[in-house]
Length: 123
Image (cartoon, rainbow, N blue to C red):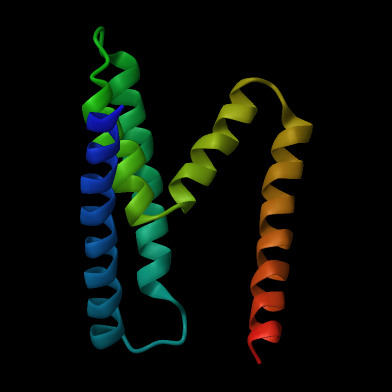
């Protein structure tokens, strides 16, 4: 358990630092009001979590430490959106369409409302 926790922390730290660098680079390089950095990070993170998950699913011997480092740690630190999409795909794979729709709709609406409420309370 301790080894897995350390792997998650190491991967999460690396993912968070890379996210920060990419966002700063896009802010300084691309002049637009569209959040290009965050958008790109979310899409790349989703691609990576799918790639890593498929890689581990194909492997005969799952390496839990490497999985913790790359999926939970790196992708989780890089973007939590990747975990959201992976869980959403899991619901679709299990033919739980109603739960899928509730999860994505609820996450979007509740997330926006929570952010709005937090901003209002902070004022």
